[in-house]
Structure formats: structure tokens, C-alpha cells
Image: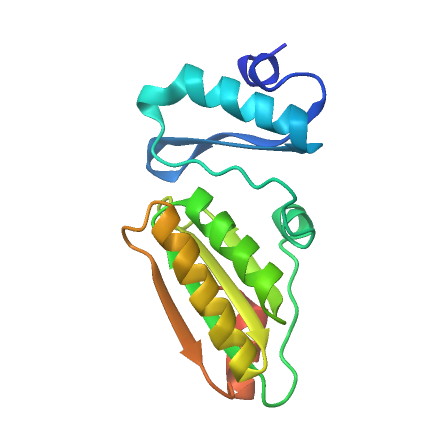
Length: 171
């Protein structure tokens, strides 16, 4: 078994593990809460001195995992607003997206972590303007609990159709 598999245990699914841009190592794993918490504790204690950022999301928002696998996208309805979340680290982005999706009536358009972004994280959310604003505020609160350096948000109210087409082509 690999080092990652030995650290996380057999009741946990390793979603991704490997190097990402800027020479960082990223490990994503999931499963039932207790085994994941135990694996997280074990992994963070072993690698403590070299951890740049980490996040544990017990009862994570269910829409995050498909986006991690599929890069799932949802395109805007007329009058929708776009929220953009950008972070200096992928774990902080996942915490912010989790908070935004749980607390506001928005949809995750796209979520990108690390590769192609110099180790940073980027997510876009669609919804009614007041819902997107609420999601951005929730994300900002999550930023403050994580590695907040380099975290930014933006709101594009009543996003033009061209914004949706640009997202469709990819960020």
C-alpha cells in the first residue's frame, strides 16, 4: 500500500493524491465522518511541519464531490448573478465553497483547485443577486478561518449572456 493509503486507512476513499503546481502535495479523501476524522488527524500529525493548509469538512456539501470528479458546470438563467471566489490555497477554497453552498441558494458553476492556477483555488457560483451576495459573505467568513492570504471575491450582478458563454469555453 502507498504511504497515503496507509495514512488514511481502509475505510476512507482517496479521491486524489499527488503533486500540484508550485511543488505542493495535495491529498483529497472522503468517507464516513469518523474514519475521515481519524485519518485527517493521523495525516496532519505525521505531516504537520510541512502542511501549508488543510481542511476537514464533516458532512460536506454533497455538490462538492461531483464537481471535484467531473468539473461540473451549471450555466446561468436570464438575470442570474455570478459570484467568484479565489483563494491562495485549495483547502481554503473547499471550505468557502462548502459554506456558500450550504448557506445560500446558489449553484456551483465551476470549481478548480491547484493545477493551472499556480496552486490557487477558483470557484464560480450562479444565482439570484441576493443569494450570490449571501454566498460570498459566507465564503468570506470561511476564508477568515482558513489561509486567508490571497482570498478575494467578486459579484457580477445580472451577468451578461457573454459571461455565461465565456465560462462555457472554460476559465
